[in-house]
Length: 422
Image (tube, one colour):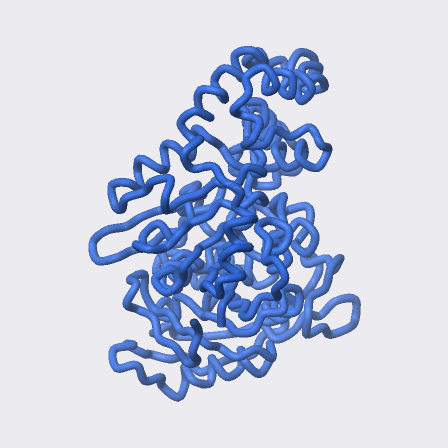
């Protein structure tokens, strides 16, 4: 196996950072392929906790090249803050971290728009107000600023003038807010570009060379399939392709298909922000899981909503991303509960559905639950109780994808494997 993708199989926050960190020890390249600094991967090694937002987890491992691909939207200021924070745990230079020339740049204008929209909108999407969506909008409308534009001040100012043409009307007449002039913004980005330049490279070419050399490549994404702009619970989604298809559009795997796509799924289901959540438990059980699992967003600090494992959605995610195996995380949180359920179907308009699909109104479905025998595992000897084994079995049988990884705590060491990877 030479290429492996880590895909969030729910609404994000599944524990991708820990799994990515483990495989990062074995990879030659770790590539982030979409999203921005609205994500948060928490990695705990001993007493040291490192939170990564846009920097790939490969930086924690020597002899590994970390790449921020062209599918990422990039905030230079936020990156430099994160860089200094992560440098407290590991050495980062232009030799072990590269940023794509083609990554779109988040400007001050994007962050202003994102914040005003989220605060003033009747339907709150639950964005992090970091400018992610507006940056992707400009990218798609062909007005975006790319990393490569930061090194020519005259051209940069001209590109910003083109980008802000319509925004000025919004700022002056609708939002009635202050904003930097194009000259001010261009100067700031140009100065930031000078600092970034040692990290900038043709990352597509680097990946191409690695493929030709037979090197091991790990692709890591942010958020989860259910937040995918095309496959997620629209409009409560992110602005990029979080499924495995994002690997090809946001980083590239020249002349190759992915050898393995690992879907990361919590043993239960969580969601941050607004949007439908069929198995949400607005009761003492939901509160217990939230408290026991310390369910707060790594980037936003927002409380995560909690509910039982939703197998119809997981089956859907597996189909969307062609998942070849699953990693079930936070099993320790369910251990010792007095009751245990899984959702095995939806009742919707008089029919029973075992798999979600695009356009299904998740606000109107009624979950069909199966009671499971609670388990009480300590995970000390690597053996599973009969009850936990049954829980894993129903996941595999329902989704049709093997569970290859079990994780039962925040530490790098609290993980076991049921199959071989690279």
